[in-house]
Image 1 (cartoon, helix red, strand yellow):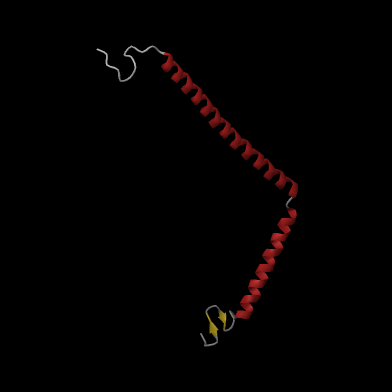
Image 2: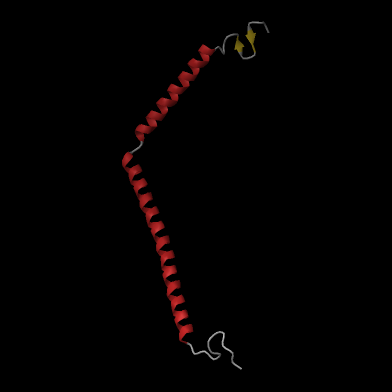
Length: 101
């Protein structure tokens, strides 16, 4: 090989000017491709999908909150009922701290 050529081609083939031109060409091609695909997207189905997803998420969270709230209310009612029965039950040993015997 001579001093003016390299394994990649003639000397200066990868000069900054040609590299920037290739990058610019690639960016323009990609930009044109993205623009073409973006024009094919229908906005209404995308917006409706996002709205449906948000409504689904709100419904899911609401169901979880109501389930937990229901559990808390039922637990509190059962605790009150158990406490009520314990307070109304007759005691055999007398009040706490008294000596029987």
